[in-house]
Image (cartoon, rainbow, N blue to C red; front, side, top):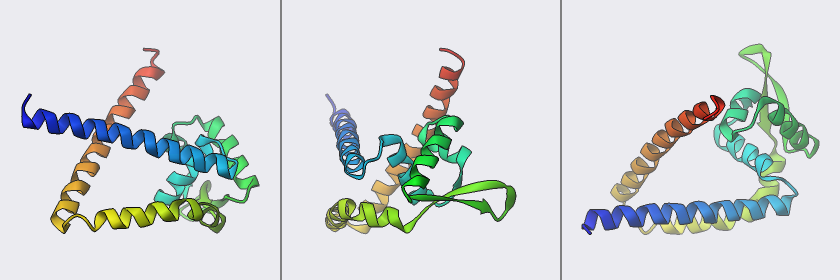
Amino acid sequence: MSRRTELTDAISREIRRQQVRTDAFDDTVAIALGLNRSDHRCLDVLEQEGPLPAGKLAKAVGLSTAAITTAVDRLEARGYVVRRDDPSDRRRVLIEITPKVNEAMWRFYAPLAQTAEQLYGRFSEDELALILRFLETASEQFDGMLDELQHELRKGV
């Protein structure tokens, strides 16, 4: 086995391990907050992307429009999101997180953020730029693959 194959296999294994650990961590936080995983994913996407129309949020988390309405209703009832008129399109509503989200989640994610900062300190700026380029490229590729898979499943494959 070539060195390149060993490295790519090891990278793939570590990505998969990290995905499992991230899912387990997020599942645990969701349980602690009394949320289901879909609701937690909604909050995560909104925290990353900012206010979104319900349709874009549904696509980002892989829910139907009916399911996203139910999720937003639950999150709004808990005070985690609000619906606001879209200033650029009065016919559209944006879903926006409230400060309560950070208050509730920071106690769980603060240690993770501190660990990440320590980890970043182990790498040079050039190494961090390379890692970032790899992750951005992977995200672009996976987004395209997900879109294709969802399209195929809608067709009944």
